[in-house]
Image 1 (cartoon, rainbow, N blue to C red):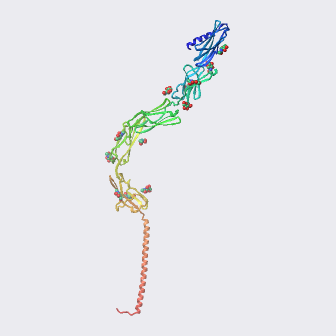
Image 2 (image 1 turned 120 degrees about the horizontal axis):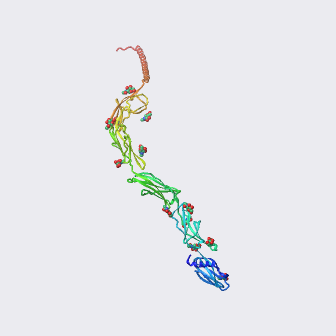
Image 3 (image 1 turned 90 degrees about the horizontal axis):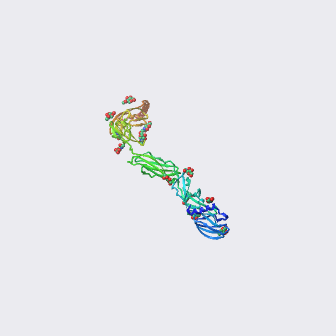
Length: 530
Ligand SMILES: *[C@@H]1O[C@H](CO)[C@@H](O)[C@H](O)[C@H]1NC(C)=O
Ligand SMILES: *[C@@H]1O[C@H](CO)[C@@H](O)[C@H](O)[C@H]1NC(C)=O
Ligand SMILES: *[C@@H]1O[C@H](CO)[C@@H](O)[C@H](O)[C@H]1NC(C)=O
Ligand SMILES: *[C@@H]1O[C@H](CO)[C@@H](O)[C@H](O)[C@H]1NC(C)=O
Ligand SMILES: *[C@@H]1O[C@H](CO)[C@@H](O)[C@H](O)[C@H]1NC(C)=O
Ligand SMILES: *[C@@H]1O[C@H](CO)[C@@H](O)[C@H](O)[C@H]1NC(C)=O
Ligand SMILES: *[C@@H]1O[C@H](CO)[C@@H](O)[C@H](O)[C@H]1NC(C)=O
Ligand SMILES: *[C@@H]1O[C@H](CO)[C@@H](O)[C@H](O)[C@H]1NC(C)=O
Ligand SMILES: *[C@@H]1O[C@H](CO)[C@@H](O)[C@H](O)[C@H]1NC(C)=O
Ligand SMILES: *[C@@H]1O[C@H](CO)[C@@H](O)[C@H](O)[C@H]1NC(C)=O
Ligand SMILES: *[C@@H]1O[C@H](CO)[C@@H](O)[C@H](O)[C@H]1NC(C)=O
Ligand SMILES: *[C@@H]1O[C@H](CO)[C@@H](O)[C@H](O)[C@H]1NC(C)=O
């Protein structure tokens, strides 16, 4: 209360407590007035005195006497800027009486403003809306209404100057993008005046939801240098998912993930790669940021290098009976297992000596190296094949030396020389050099019989072996043939004999006839002397 208000208030109090004696009364009209700030009002002070009373108006406002009559005076008070109490007084017969009036000034607030909203507001948390109101009166009739769009959320009285009125809203997903505002209502309708409204500029809210858990990280724990593996970082229940940002980094190297969203889920995929010389542990970090909050997951990825072990044979191709050193060497931290090696202390190196035999030709040696990286046992293998030069070999197993078959049967003649390099093999018959038909025989004939010499030749030398082929044939069959032939021969001989006999007979008969003819002629002609 301003000090200037103290005197009229005190006088009003006195006037109320001490009514004038003798019945003369001072009146004021109106006793209460409501007017806009800076407005004017007329006040009529009058006295019920039956004689001429002296009248006055006690106020610190600008006053002008606008009219007067018998025991009344009318004043105009102008530029009324604040609430004020007035006192009319009159002196009637030496007695002073008073009457008080009050002026109420109304005005709309100069400023109605909704305080800035947080740039991002988490869903499920309370948002405090603050409405700043400067000015406005009478405060008893001034209310602040909080609005979401057109929807009324809360209404509260305005207290203080300037006033800040607050309301809380539990933010939901639907509040994302909603426009919040506050409005003052100066309701003077009971006084026959209006409802005066002033609305703040709207502020748009950005709401977000982020689950309390960190993103899921699907990535290898170990990564070999020179290789690439995919890492996927995903998080569900994000709102609005399109606004989420992903930061994926291996150590201090930022990765450029491919981001895919589906519903309210997000997944970011990137390739992890390690170069030689980068061995060691790195943190793989995935952070999903939404609003001003972030969820992060970390995982250790161990970068390692692990070349396959070096498996060496002192010579990859040796002659039978030569000693070969088989050696496997891996990096210092690895443990190798070499096939064929005698058990020894585990370590990065293993070797053994081998007296190469024909059986070792084509033998594979394998060396497996195991390396433990971040609790995982990794394996790398290498194999080498040994070639042993041997032979030619041609023994009973390869080429049986005695075949005895029946004529006309089907047989398989087996003869194969062994050796590395593979030997050439020829079997030729001793007597005429005919070649032995190795393989399937559809029909064994007796002409196959004989002693063959098989010769196996390779760059490492030659070897011979005799193969005897005996074809059995049954003479019973031949007997029939002989009988048939004999019969034919007999028949032939008999036929020839018959023919010759017949011919001989015809000749005799002819000669007889000729002799008879000659005898007859000799009888008819005289014989001539020689
Ligand atoms: C002032 O009041 C008196 C007494 O009530 C009345 O007679 C007079 O007309 C009033 N004057 C005005 C200007 O209203
Ligand atoms: C408040 O509203 C009234 C009308 O209701 C208007 O005349 C006045 O200019 C407004 N005040 C502000 C600060 O906007
Ligand atoms: C997010 O912003 C709000 C207000 O804008 C603040 O209170 C809160 O501390 C911020 N959170 C983080 C993690 O920065
Ligand atoms: C939000 O505020 C209301 C009261 O205004 C309270 O009952 C509620 O527990 C609050 N909720 C949260 C999540 O803080
Ligand atoms: C205005 O304020 C006065 C005084 O407090 C009160 O009596 C009246 O009911 C109020 N009117 C409204 C509409 O709030
Ligand atoms: C909020 O206001 C902005 C402009 O101020 C408008 O573009 C947007 O559509 C409004 N949002 C809603 C939900 O009404
Ligand atoms: C390898 O073995 C063969 C036969 O077993 C033997 O004759 C030869 O002397 C051995 N060579 C060596 C170097 O031990
Ligand atoms: C294998 O041999 C290569 C070439 O000789 C060498 O550079 C490498 O270090 C060896 N690796 C191992 C594990 O010894
Ligand atoms: C290496 O050898 C082991 C056992 O000998 C086998 O299980 C594994 O599959 C092999 N790995 C490769 C890459 O050959
Ligand atoms: C071949 O085999 C036959 C019978 O199986 C035998 O009578 C003959 O003596 C053998 N010949 C040789 C040279 O081994
Ligand atoms: C076997 O015979 C073929 C042709 O008859 C000949 O070309 C080849 O050199 C012979 N091989 C041997 C080992 O005698
Ligand atoms: C020889 O005959 C056997 C079956 O009697 C057959 O499996 C094989 O393939 C034949 N070999 C040739 C060279 O025809």
